[in-house]
Length: 199
Image (cartoon, rainbow, N blue to C red):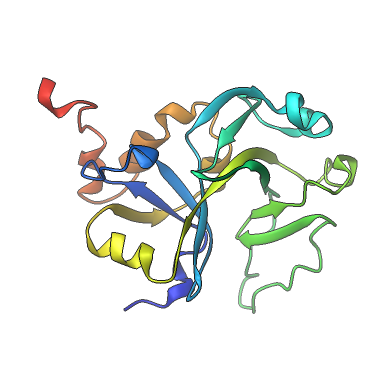
């Protein structure tokens, strides 16, 4: 079995066989994965609610579309900020991972340039550093071993994330785009019809 923490920062891409309507064609960014469970956000579920309608101070920093995304079926009444601070990698060349000492107040690096934004922090403290920001209502959560069981059942493809995935301007195309960029047979899955019965 692979090391448990290796899923943090990666994408879970729903397979066409995944039957749960909460995750139909979902692309989930894993923010935390350890022996106590997993937490992530669905990157491709925009809502009609504008960021300014609930978090006015953050509206100017949220990328297009400037709406709140449904991060998953858990805690829909809570908001979670995921941002990208470009230019700094998690591990400098030839060295150990950075400890985060260069990260601005209110930003906790998760993987590479991607991190969590503390929405209680005054937005102006992060404005200059943030390359992109997305606000999520709720999250996707799995108990201990639950995600591993779903992976064993073939419910998810696990692929590498790219910082641009967090702020895709056309989130409804993200499922196909992520699969299409894979250098394997997964690229063919991107052509899978929305409704196989119409094929």
